[in-house]
Image (tube, rainbow, N blue to C red; front, side, top):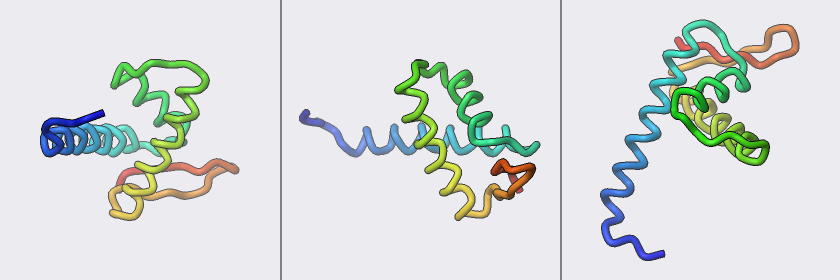
Length: 88
């Protein structure tokens, strides 16, 4: 639909993303899997939970983790056949 003030919506979305990044960075002081990070974010952000939503959230979290890895805020590594993420 029509958005009367796109700039404020963009700023609001940026704020939401920054909050997610901060939560992910602080939660991964100890190494965590993507699934653990997703579960944590669902609880912290009080997001709705169902099977379909969960898989969408997994993809969104993967994108956030990829961004944070590219920005050198977290690192990823393999441990016992799992990909782990840990803040730097």
